[in-house]
Image 1 (cartoon, rainbow, N blue to C red):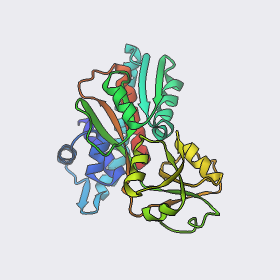
Image 2 (cartoon, helix red, strand yellow; image 1 turned 135 degrees about the vertical axis):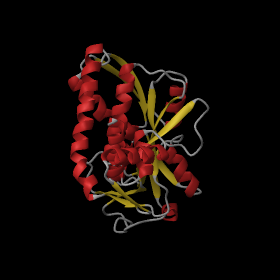
Image 3 (cartoon, helix red, strand yellow; image 1 turned 30 degrees about the vertical axis):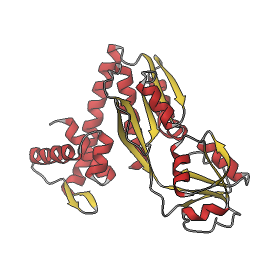
Image 4 (cartoon, rainbow, N blue to C red; image 1 turned 60 degrees about the horizontal axis):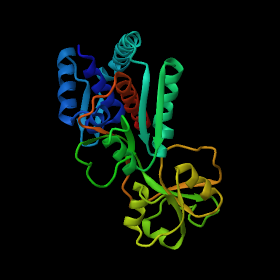
Length: 293
């Protein structure tokens, strides 16, 4: 049995769709479907039921989830042992990311690797998506985790979707909009706004939907946006990634007419990453998958 087929099946179960599983695994949707079909043929059972609402495990598929997870974990343990003995867990990995990606995706991976593999070193550069992608393209970074820009990737770059989050508004609990279940972009036209700095995807999204927003603060991080909101500076426009839970008296209200924001891994198409960079990149994709599972 090919362990990769078990990975695809588990990704489909955890995400609820073949499309999301393909994005998580970095392959095409037909590849996921074909490999799961081969796994079903190999095991002589039907693993998934498919509908327009997604995929769900059959009773047989449900019974095999834990055994297949143990299989994948065992294969990863063998691979990590081999990499440890070959010196793959040494050297420096250079990563770029938007601040929310650094906090929610990159930092947990770096922390885990440093606990078990002290020979690894990291350079982590925070910046806007465009700046991170430019540094990846120039070879200054091994790869980046950015908010998906609206335009296509530059020639020579490849973007791999990782996770998505809805866009909304942070407001103090005593703000007039705080009691609403949802708001729309036009509701922001008459209030001061705190958002990410010019050049970021969030800045561009805000200005694409609100003709002349009253931006009173351009922040360098999502945490700063929330702190400013907590101090009554204005409404904060952000995607909802779970960060900075210690900021109190702030509520998040979804923007009903906003498209979700997507995090993606960006890398050079012709890059030949070091073994350690490949390990970090794989773990970052796994960590992002946990955010949507």
